[in-house]
Image 1: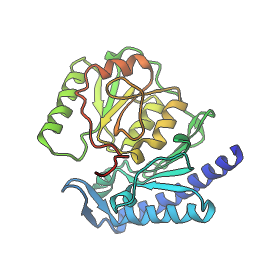
Image 2: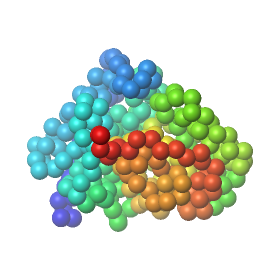
Image 3: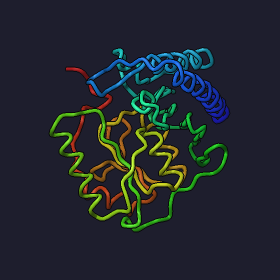
Image 4: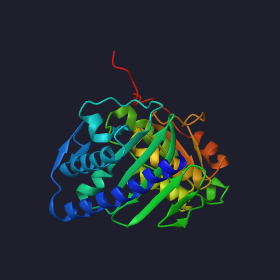
Length: 279
């Protein structure tokens, strides 16, 4: 199976690069916008076009494989991670960035077997940075090995987070409560690239010590989660338990010391899970 998964990963890298070309071209020519759950939850024709292109390409090569794609789920398909080989796709992670030409936009492709991510590919296409990881074989950016920061003092750290698309006052209050407490530890700074996948790659690269967020989806973090751990980092739930791909909650950090310190300050809440069963 190892050779087959490597072949699948090579295909993911190639299709991610092709998707990046489509996104860069659309950035210049076509950024037509519609909305999903709210006026700030954006989707473009390019999101849909890129996801369709990726899925079609993979189906031709691996017809028995399954898919979880952001736009497919938005269109009503189930988001269930089974034991079957499954491609977990975010065609444009950072759609709001794309709409505003803010320069962090990523194609994220994770591949899971037995509910475990076997490889991850994140292509930050406006930077032309290709992040890759294969389970047990390390993480890389443009072919160069990645290693998390060796910082253990949270007061000497930069923490990444995002504000999400919910404008529910209670959710916003929790987000800012966490932000206020973490900022006042005090940490060196709080940053956010506007894309979960890139934020996780920044942890893997040693540029930030941790990233946390509540409200992300499995397609935002599947690829990045493996890139973080293969670069020597750790994953955790926002309440300190084991990271769950479908929970929509994540802490990714360079080490357990930083992760556990961040968890102490997070005002945790539970969004509806990605694998929820409709009643």
